[in-house]
Length: 214
Image 1 (cartoon, rainbow, N blue to C red):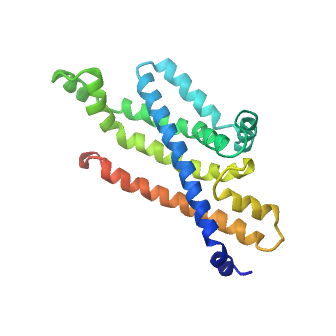
Image 2 (cartoon, rainbow, N blue to C red):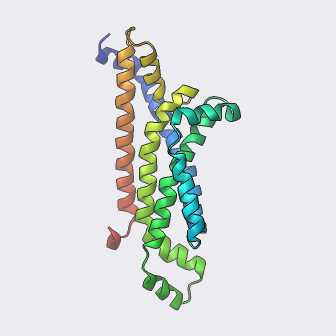
């Protein structure tokens, strides 16, 4: 069967897996954003502690994804649980690092001016520091998202949802009917999804970043 015939016959499943892949990535990155930004805000005033936490979360990136998925199976079983958990573990580091970097990049004079007009610590954070740090924070979320798209494909090894199912099925049957088509379509679809989400963050940055910070 040619690639065009394969796409014509299997497009409903491909679209379903594409949507599942996007959903699992966005859910995991959403959770990681809450954790990463929260940790960054909480630890920003404690240099030693935040260095330790950044180093710890960074070291988790060195764990091979297949190994991490395997370690999570006894705890969470197969499917969505280990998939989202692993993606959250990998996504926290770039978000946390960029949150800290963004907050540290806010000029002290701006913070002092905000204090001078009577803003409390929470008010300075919410109204001044986080908005100024936002472009850097968003870059961390963007990096975490693109990274998660690739890692989520490996989740098919633990019955995770998404386009990895096409890739793994195709590679497992390589030489059989439509095996190459499956692997190729899955791989290209992952790349297309990564590009689409990257463009989404370009639009979000444009809409949520003040003109003076662009």
